[in-house]
Amino acid sequence: MLIKQYVKSRNVGKVTFELPAAELPEEAQAESVVLVGEFNDWDPAATPMTYSKKKKAFRASLELEPGQAYQFRYFVDNKYWCNDWQADAYVPTGMGHDNCVVVAPVASEDG
Image 1 (cartoon, helix red, strand yellow):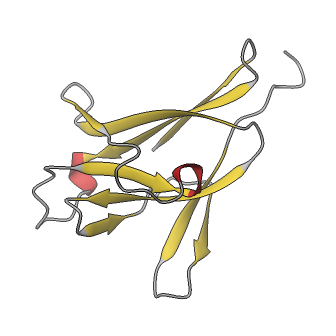
Image 2 (tube, one colour):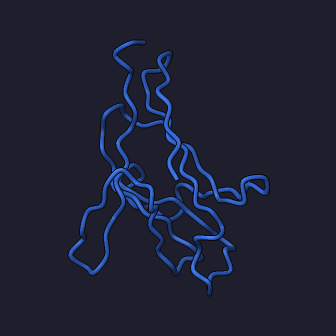
């Protein structure tokens, strides 16, 4: 799930990425869940996600360039790739799977 907010004071699009524990592969231990994508050069060490007991989900927040589209995926236990089924779009990779796409929020016209 993607939670988006435009932060006017910093002119950034804040995106909270949320991967519910129920959407993890059955065989995954979920010892590590990381967010990887174009915003961190697909570095599996750059953006670890933290587990929220209240939300029963792994979460990470990033400040991104407003209006910019970024491809991303979740990487679980250094082994399993997961998609966000509420992403803004999906892009085929040519390797038999799709990458998710998020578009960072922009300032609203009325605000």
